Amino acid sequence: MTEDAPELRASDADRERVAEVLRDALAEGRLDMEEFEERLDQTYKARTYGELAPITRDLPTAAQAAVAPRLSMTKEPERSGSWAGRIVGGEGSSTWAVAVMSGFQRKGRWTVPKRFTSFAFWGGGEIDLREANFADGEVVINCVAIMGGIQVTVPPGVEVLVRGIGIMGGFDHREEGVPGDPGAPRVVVTGFAFWGGVGVERKLTRAERLRLKEERRQEKLERKESRRELGEGYADDVHDAHHRMLDGHHDLMRERRRERQEERDRRRRGDH
Image 1 (cartoon, rainbow, N blue to C red):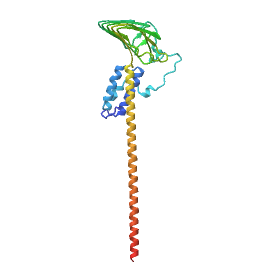
Image 2 (image 1 turned 90 degrees about the horizontal axis):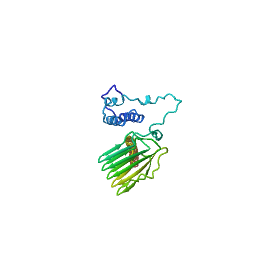
Image 3 (image 1 turned 60 degrees about the vertical axis):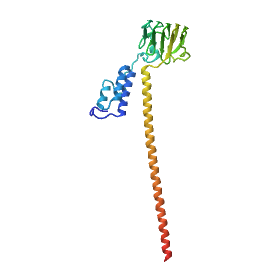
Image 4 (image 1 turned 135 degrees about the vertical axis):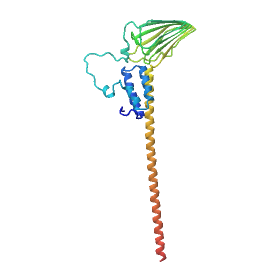
C-alpha cells in the first residue's frame, strides 16, 4: 500500500493488512477496545489508499514491531492477560454493592476482593468478572436478593461453585462442574434469595468475541479463495479435456477421409 497515489482503489488484501496491524495493536495494548472497533470499522469501509493510510499512521509496522527488544536480566511481571497476572493480592477496589428499588454494576477493570457482598431489594445488580483482577486465588461473591435479582458473569477458565439458598427463588447452578484452567481463580457464589434469583453465566469478553469473529471471517475468506482456485483448476481441466476431445475427433475425421480416398483410388484402378 502506498500514499503516493491516495486516489487508487484499495483491495480486500489491503484492508486485511490494515486489520492485521490493528489486531496486533489491540493485543499489545496500543489500542483500547473502543479505538480498535472504530478503526476496524473505518478499515472495512475504506475504498481508497488515502482512506486507509491514516488508520495506522500512529502504529508501528510489522517490520518495526519485529525488532528484537534488549535482553533484560531481571524477572519481568507476568503478562497481563495470563491468570497469574490477574491474581494481584490487596484488598480489592470494591467490597460491597446495594440496590434498593434501583440497580448496581461492577464491571470492567476492577479488583475483586476475597469476599464481595451484594444486596438487591426490588432491584437488580450486575457483577461482571470477565475483565477483573482478583485479590486471591479464591474469592467469595455473597448475594442477597429479595424480590430482586443479581447476575454474576465469569470468564471461561474460571471454576465456579454455587452455595446459595433459595426460598421461592433460586441460584443458578448451570456453570458448576466445569474444570478451571491451571492457575485460574475459583469463584464461590453464596447467599440467599427470597422471591428473587441469582444467575451465574460464563461469557467471553467483547475483545475475545471480536477476535473469534475476525478468525471466522478470515477462515471464510480463505475458504472462498480455495473454492475460487479449485473452480479455476476445474475450468482448466475441462478446457484441456475439451481440446483433447476435439483433437481426437479431428484425427478420426482425417483417418476416415484418408480411408475413403484410398477406397476411391482402388476403385479407379479396378475400372482401368
